Amino acid sequence: MNRPDTRDAALQFPGPLTANNSQVNFELDEGRTTPGGEPPRADLASISPGFFRVMAIPVVQGRDISERDANGAPQVALVSQSAARQYWPGQDPIGHRILLGPRDDPKSGFTIVGVVGDIRRRSPAHPPAPTLYVSYHQFTIPYMTLLARAPGGSDVLSAAVRSEVRAIDPLLPLGEVRPLSEMQDHSIGQTRFRTLLLSAFAGVVLLLAAGGIYGLMSYSTAQRTREIGIRLSLGAKPADVLRLVGRRGLGLTLAGLGAGVAGALALSRIFRGLLFDTSATDPLIYAGIAVLLAPVAAVACFIPAYRATRVDPGIVLRGD
Image 1: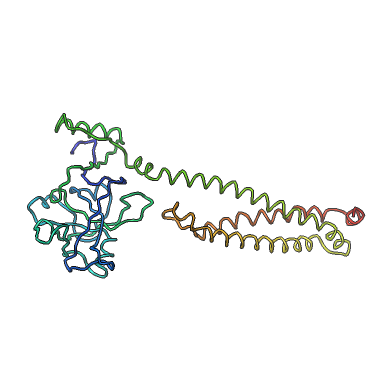
Image 2: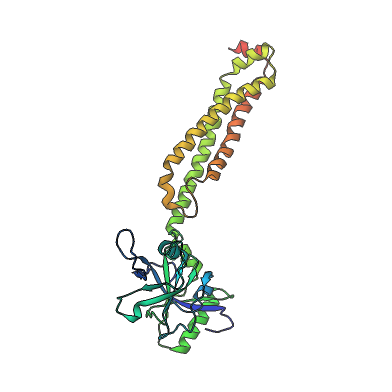
């Protein structure tokens, strides 16, 4: 496709962020197997030249697949960085051969010519899997996905794709044209909904916790009004009373935060399946909650203590 409204295009099977992921067992030229005795296993992608450029996947070592890697030419493959680390640890995988079929089949051997960056082919929630990339000329699959970039957006691109397909074959059916961002949103839709729901509940719980801390600390400090009156009548200064109440409130707050953090860490395993690229034990999150709740407790201690220091000690004592 070489239209002015299309920046770049390539073919791939399986399509990005779909359930049609193709996994294959393969053999290494050294004859090595996995610790369980099974042959190595990886995702397999059949691609056209330009695929890595369209998908902005870096070729970190070696070369890309090109038009010269056609049917009849020496068969080549590229591997992802995770595959290189797993099956050629401490080695340069370029130049090694893999077998995608029987040893006596000359079409089953592929020579590795490059290493590319890892991507999340299945969904953003799944970590990158070891992947093999082969030329669609040398490993032909009849069901391919067309990937294209266009500066005009998905509507302009959809019209350009349909026009090109009709020009090639008016009877050729064309599947759904969808932006990659829409496919990404769909792949994480359920996870995002659960996360938003949990976040809403967490926000409500956080507000309830802040209100509970304020109420408890206010009640605890108000109960000491008579004690504060006695201290003031014996010559204590208001600042001394505030420091006294603050130390006690701070001790209770730290004890509560410590218990809360311990409980949250114990329950963190439940939420690990809902997170990706984020740790359930992220220290910044725990520190942020502590920073949020600590001022609430400080205000809860300060306001009733300050009110008590403004009252005439005699009135306080007579009131009891």
